[in-house]
Length: 73
Image (cartoon, rainbow, N blue to C red; front, top):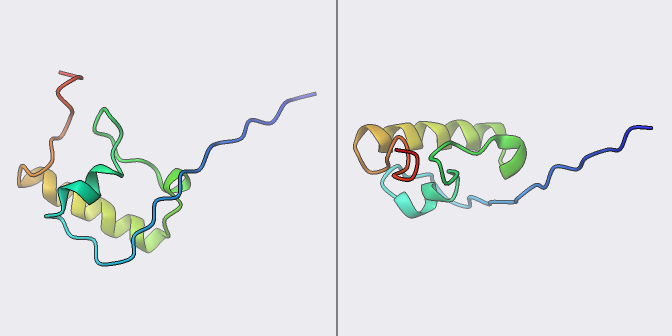
């Protein structure tokens, strides 16, 4: 028999507009290495996740968020 492994879902809720200038809100959706947390773990809708990814990439290009964390360097 094969044991089923449950993936822990962390509900992160976005109530308002996703702003690329709000680094505190965007930081919640990044791992400690600086990677974007996938949609199946965050529990966002597909539309919200697309907007989030666009905002994170915009913030990275404007140097509001780092591309990778200091610990990885």
